[in-house]
Image 1 (cartoon, helix red, strand yellow):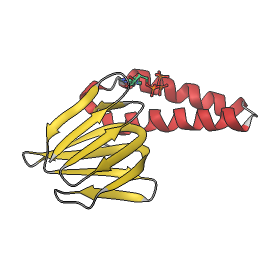
Image 2 (cartoon, protein in one colour; image 1 turned 60 degrees about the vertical axis):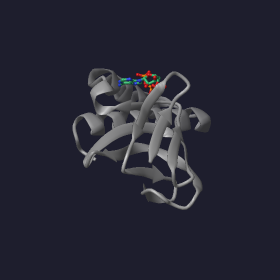
Image 3 (tube, protein in one colour; image 1 turned 180 degrees about the vertical axis):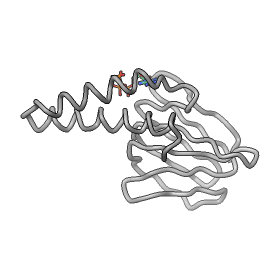
Image 4 (cartoon, helix red, strand yellow; image 1 turned 90 degrees about the vertical axis):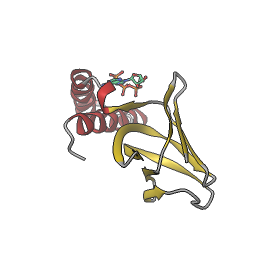
Length: 131
Ligand code: ATP
């Protein structure tokens, strides 16, 4: 099964894989070859794929997952493998978002800060292996 994870900036993963696991808005999804065709929104979270029996996690900042049972495509604003994550940058992003949440009043701004906080927490969870 082919897996392709793309962002507007780059192809993050393009691999032949055995399985894909993701966090959708309705809960976890596991995709093995011959899965029924599906398109589903993803949460900001950790997803993973299995290649040569090894499970590899990555942080995905929401987006869409689609499969036809032969290939899986993920289109997301941003995604990073654990080795690509700058933990110091994510820690700063977390602190910035927390500080903003303490002072913001506008609902839209609060929602944006909550999303920024979620992105930072997922990145930090992946680098510290707490998932
Ligand atoms: P920041 O405030 O640090 O930019 P952000 O959550 O606003 O964080 P995004 O908009 O999700 O950042 O991503 C912008 C680009 O930067 C994407 O290419 C993403 O992969 C990359 N990126 C963001 N944070 C990190 C990080 N901690 N380590 C590595 N790459 C990151």
